[in-house]
Structure formats: C-alpha cells, structure tokens
Amino acid sequence: MMATNRYTFRKAAAADLGLLRKWQSRPHVREWWDSDEPGNEEELADPRIVRWIVSTVGRPFAYMQDYTVHGWEDHHFFGLPEGSRGIDQFIGDPDMIGKGHGSAFITERLTTLYEESAPVVAVDPHPDNARATAAYRRAGFAEFGPPRETRWGPILPMKVGR
Image 1 (cartoon, rainbow, N blue to C red):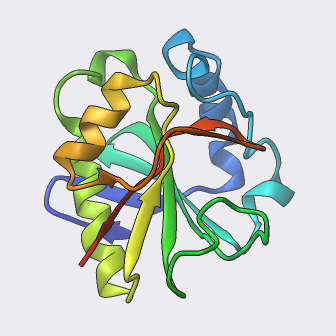
Image 2 (image 1 turned 180 degrees about the vertical axis):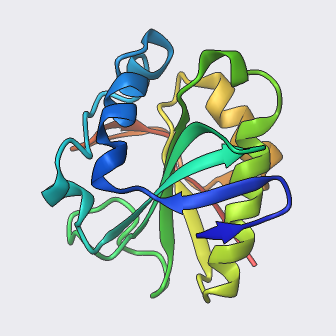
C-alpha cells in the first residue's frame, strides 16, 4: 500500500472485482470505459499492468492502472523511451466527479512513477472526452500527435515527462 498526501493507492485484489464491476456498470464510466477488464483474477494478475483502488479519507472512489507501454508490440505508445508507463483511470462514484480529484490523484501517482524511474508517462483518452482531457492537462499532460484510431478505439495521445 502506498500513502500519499491526499490519496491512498492500494493494489487491486480479487476481492475488489465486485466493486470494479459495480463502478464499470455506471453510465458515466461506460460512456468512456468500454472494457470490463479486469474481469477476473487472471486479468488482475497480468504482470504488465499494475492496478490500483484509489481512496481519499478512507473512501474508495476510483480505479487507476499503470502499465508498461512496451508490453504489447502493437501498442500505440511502443515508440516511447524504455521504462515509459501508460495510465488509465476512472472515478467510480459519480458524486466524486467535478471536484478536482481526477487531476489530483493522477498528479500524485505521477510523482511515484517518476520516483520509480519512468521517463515518460502517457495517456490516451477518447478525443471527445473533454472532462478527461482537461484533467490530464491540469496534471501536466500535453498532446503529442493528432487523434487517431487504434485497436483499443479512438485516442488522443498525451504525455508528460520529468
């Protein structure tokens, strides 16, 4: 478990799969997060991806994952420097949206990824997801290419580095 200033990042476990399914079933998550992954213990154990339950004041409210961008040869971030990480996340509880939590917990996680030697962190929101794009910009991300189609769907490539 890793404690930070405002947020706690706890590695997701099999016991969290029900909570993740609940969050993933909500309309505000389904609109942009079209995957049910991780849906089982095998997916949860994928060594390329580290999955987190994010809490504030002891309340779990979000999911975050960071992954090696070099774990898939056809990944759209494969050309980034060795050690680069990709991130994805969503806020599961709708009453926690619009309060600055997204950019704040992303910023806290970035600090840890840099401490773990990630030279670049990238994210790939849907080009129409203005709320996510704004949160990433507040966390320091900038676009590094035009929107494009990938096997995971349409993306707007964004990155930040030390």
